[in-house]
Image (cartoon, rainbow, N blue to C red; front, side, top):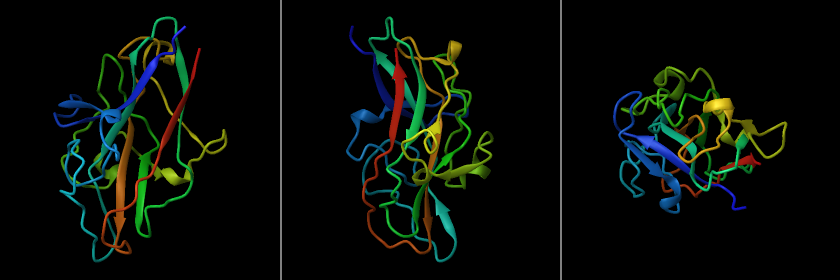
Length: 194
């Protein structure tokens, strides 16, 4: 039996509830995702957020999800977990925040999608996100990983093109940050397949 194939995607462009583009993250980079002041999938040095004189500024939001792309027959996937290695290697004044609510994304609906039209703070920008936290607070292990949600039938992914709900992410840049490109960070999504 061949295992099902899953890829990470993110949506961008379009209008609320209807993204303009679905980008397979696996087809980019490395790096595979870049936090910037533009709503696109381009990995380049353009649209960099500037370090503020005081306080914190924010990148455009990223709506990320997992999608089954092949070999779904006789397979079921659930128990999605999202985590980091726990060490913020980006440098002083830089962080990656994740929404602690997971807006609806499935094979029939993108109703949880909200177009990233500017670089406002996540909780004030997204109508479904009411709280957030640093990804670096979530590490592997039942007590510290972040359990994601699935809104497909029976809360499982068991067919091609079925997805997880959105993970909404944002880069935070504080006035204490140093100029230059930050190093890459790895975020991991695991799941049970049976």
